[in-house]
Length: 263
Ligand SMILES: Nc1ncnc2c1ncn2[C@@H]1O[C@H](COP(=O)(O)OP(=O)(O)OP(=O)(O)O)[C@@H](O)[C@H]1O
View 1 (cartoon, protein in one colour):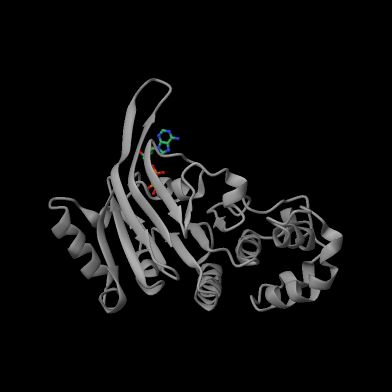
View 2 (tube, rainbow, N blue to C red):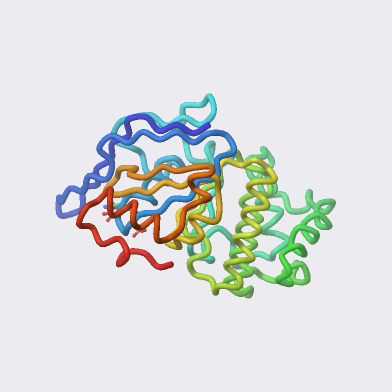
């Protein structure tokens, strides 16, 4: 479904300093995989997602999604089959537009007529139904500007918008990190329901090891641009935070994993 082949990426700062993030990364996401991604700061997690999304072009290597070679595909074309939800609730939604307008815009993504809010009057009931399942009261604020919603409500909306048209690939970059534990749980449960219910191939970055274990069918750990743990199925289900850290210690002797993660 998604294949990264021999990806190399080095960033060069304005001062000329080089940072090699990927030497030769190979990674295969199967259709319907829900993969949680963990790793210390600077391991390359966001860069991995951005290479797939086309926000960052690799120096060499190929990115395939289904039968398409998307390595140099324009972003707007990729956007018709890929979606992302960011950590910051202000990204991914338009603050000066209403909830209804935002949902209409997301619904029309990739369609030729672009932003045509009026065309989605028949979908208003569907949006209200989708929002009411969250139990956050957003369905009663359909005509409220999104900038006036709480961070949690906004993040829920961003998730609904990102999955409204059932993308082939969904990217979640610490999308619950800025939320309180209760709202985070609501969003995680909704994420699981939408992703598994629609068989959407999903990559979710998290610093919460328990979430990384609890959600998804597969988990990878990135370290200095390399996948050092790739675990799925029963082996993943049997993981505990302690056993995960222990495995990490074995892989990276002398590396004090506990200090790098919040649980
Ligand atoms: N545009 C850029 N220019 C220069 N260096 C960059 C750029 N983007 C990322 N880097 C560097 O590449 C490395 C990997 O960054 P990346 O954001 O992918 O890490 P990460 O695993 O997502 O980290 P975090 O958990 O802190 O978000 C870091 O050292 C980062 O400073």
